[in-house]
Image: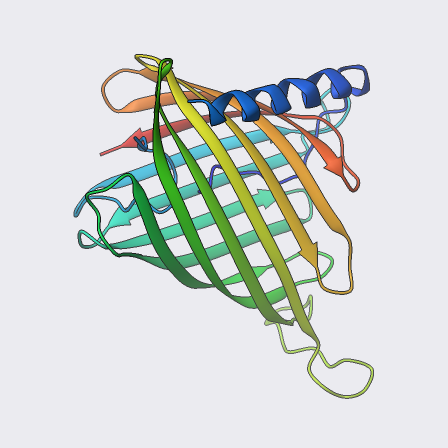
Length: 259
C-alpha cells in the first residue's frame, strides 16, 4: 500500500522527540495488529471501475522549515476494470524529481477477507544519480475485525531495476568503468497496519524498508491519522522517524480525494 509517501529524503529536525515518536509508532503498529480495507492508496484492493483516487502530500524539511525544502508528492489511481488499476506516483524535492506509472492487477477471489495483487511499471528519477527503471511488485492484504472497529494489514514487496542516466538534457545512458551500462537495483518492503478507530477517523502505522544494491539499508516508521472531511475528502497528518540509516523526524500533511 502506497501510503506514502514517504519519502524519507525530506525531514524536520526534532531530535528530542525522536525516541518518543518511535515508541508511539511501534505502539500504533502493535495496536493495529489487534484491529475491511478502506479507500486508501494502492495495496491489493483494486479501485472500482471508473473510480478515481487522488492524494496530495507535503513533508517539511530543515530545522524550522523556513528554507523551503521538503518533499511534495502526487499519487493517483484510476479503476480501469474491476481487476485492473492504473496508477501514477510523482514526487518533487530539493534537487530531485521522481515519476512512476504502473498497472496493478488483482488476482484470485475478491469476496473474502484476503486479497492478492501484482503490479509493474516504469519510472524515472533525476538528481545526483538519475536513472530510468522498471518496477515489479506484489501486494497481499487482509481485513481484520476487532472490538475497536474494522482494520487491515498489508504487505507490499517491490523490486526496481534500471539504468543510469546522464544529468544533461536530453539524458543519455551512462557507462560503468568497465564499459558496460551502469545499472541500478533496489528492493523495498512496506508493512502497513490500520484501523477505523471511529466513524470518520482512521489511524495507521507503517514500516518502510529499502535496500539499495551496493548501498545502504534504510527503514522508517510512520504513524498517521486520517480525518474525513466532507463526502469525498480526507485530511492526513503523520509523523515518521528513521529506525535504520540516516534521517530525521519528519512531519507530513496530506489530502485524499475520491471521485
